[in-house]
Structures are given as C-alpha cells and as structure tokens.
Amino acid sequence: MAGTRFQAIVQDAKTKIREVSAAEAYELQAQGATLVDVREGTEFCNGHATGAQHLSKGILELKIEEAIPDTSKPIVCYCGGGSRSALAAESLQRMGYSRVASLAGGFKAWKSAGLPIENDASSAGTSTN
Image 1: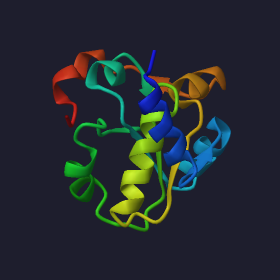
Image 2: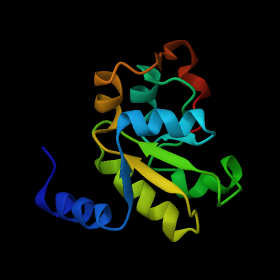
Image 3: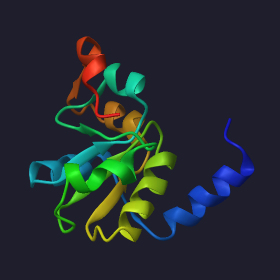
Image 4: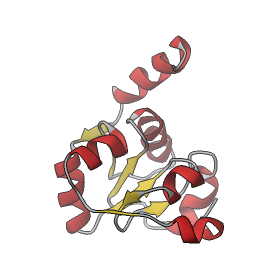
C-alpha cells in the first residue's frame, strides 16, 4: 500500500496533467503517439502494451531526450495503476514535452480493455534501464 505522502504528490500531479482512458491511449498510439512504460524492467518483461517503449521511472528523465528528442511528439506514459505514470507525465511536461498524457488505471486498465499485449521475458537483458 502506498503511503499518504506518495498519494498526495500523485493527486497533485494529476491536477497538472492530462489523463486518458485505455481506449484513448490505444487510439493515440494508432495516430503516432509513443507509449512509454515507466514500470520496472521485470514488470515490463512480464507483459506490456504492444509497441510500448520501456523507460522506467528511475531513468526516464535521464534517457527521454535520447529516446524521444522531439518535445512535440505525443507521448502516453503508463505504469501498473496510473500513479507512477502521472508523476512521469508531470516530469516530462516540466522538461518541455508538450503533448504528454498518463494512462488512467495504467497497465491494469489496458489489460481490462482487452488491448494488445506482448511479453518479452526472453529479452529481459535488453531493456533500456
């Protein structure tokens, strides 16, 4: 269970970012947005949205400019349930990324919506974190 201070900063971040549903995230991806999975490497390898790029929350700010140099590129961040991705989206906005959203409900919402998932258990060592 997340602590109350963590929940407070997540709620604050959510007032500053755009959240999208799983269906909206899927549509945005179809229109060219990059899905960025900010979960840990083991979470990503155990299953992620098809076509998602992995940049864990711990390295996101360090690697984002190399991975997505265009600050106007649409990005949808997601995590397991929508908290870490809200913090990630807020951070990317502070870095100048102008078209960032967070997937409300995270990967759980993506799976519940029956959207495409892939597993990369065999590529655990090739993650970007």
